[in-house]
Image (tube, rainbow, N blue to C red):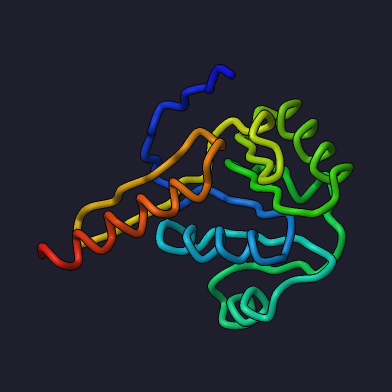
Length: 154
């Protein structure tokens, strides 16, 4: 099996609109990470976690508790779909490809313009860890090891 390689690129997301379709555990983890880089996040899902609701109520993100619409993706710089509905994921992917929007479908590594990395931040360092969508457990273990190393040595 040939593993597709992705170039690690660090992008300024501060003023770029990010849309997250889905409101479960994966979407919540991704939003938590994204908040370190931008507050321009719009979550759209018919059900969302309490944490996402609280982040919305506090004004950190925008939350729309409803099914997504094509208009939700307009002007998005980047879209992350973390749903449990293949039809929704396929629609999001198709629309993003038509509109030239960077897209990541959490449940399908072949439908990703980018992979969402494990992130370690320490002082001015930002480290992204990715296993090409093949071994999430290994990437998580490496992320934890790097985090522990940085905390111990500095």
